[in-house]
Amino acid sequence: MADFVSRGFGGGRRAPEHLAKRMPPGQYYEKGFPVLTAGPTPRVDLASWTFKVEGKVVSPGEWSWEQVAGLGLEQIPCDIHCVTKWSKLDTSFGGVSLDRFWDRVEPRGGFAVARSTGGYTTNLPMEDLTGGKAWLVWEHEGTPLTPDHGGPVRLLVPHLYLWKSAKWISQIRVLADDYPGFWEANGYHNRGDPWREQRYWND
Ligand SMILES: Nc1nc2c(c(=O)[nH]1)N[C@H]1C(S)=C(S)[C@@H](COP(=O)(O)O)O[C@H]1N2
Ligand SMILES: [Mo]
Image (tube, rainbow, N blue to C red):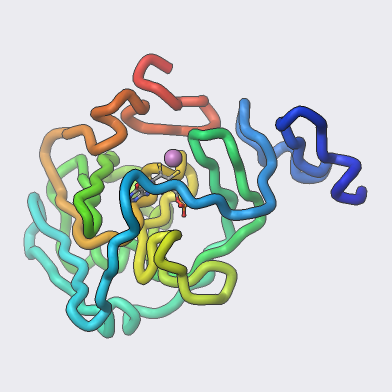
């Protein structure tokens, strides 16, 4: 089916029929990659950037860019869903599973807060960050992640709304208790499962 046939009028764009089952409720089909950032895009210098994993872990870790990139480059085909209602299907990122970091630090808490250069935070249960469901990524569709999309390195948790995928990530802190991040403290749902339409705190 040609693209124009599936484009509705009045804003709500529908996915091509063969992709319809991959659209969570209330989402529209977006072919572009919109930018959504609260505040300015920070400059991250890879030479001094590090990724830290701290908190309730057996051995805290800090990795330089060379060390992160040295863990390998996995291609991650996925669909992404923004709480502002766009979904981008059949896209891909390149990066490394967070499981590689968990193997080294041995987490001992059930929750985590991801923190970005610039101060953005988002909270997730460890269940959503383990078992091949979350990555540090630095490529999008085969090219380096641009600064507006969180480059050089961002978190990717595609099974949850995209506000959980912290751009310009610098740290993950493992915790015994759950503490809301930036949007979660400002009315967004604590977990953010797009298939359950967990957009706002009372959804
Ligand atoms: N550091 C940081 N990460 C962030 C944000 C932000 O403002 N700062 N916005 C979040 C939100 S609300 C969304 S929808 C996605 C948007 O990612 P994109 O701009 O690459 O589409 O990034 C998330 N990660
Ligand atoms: Mo968002």
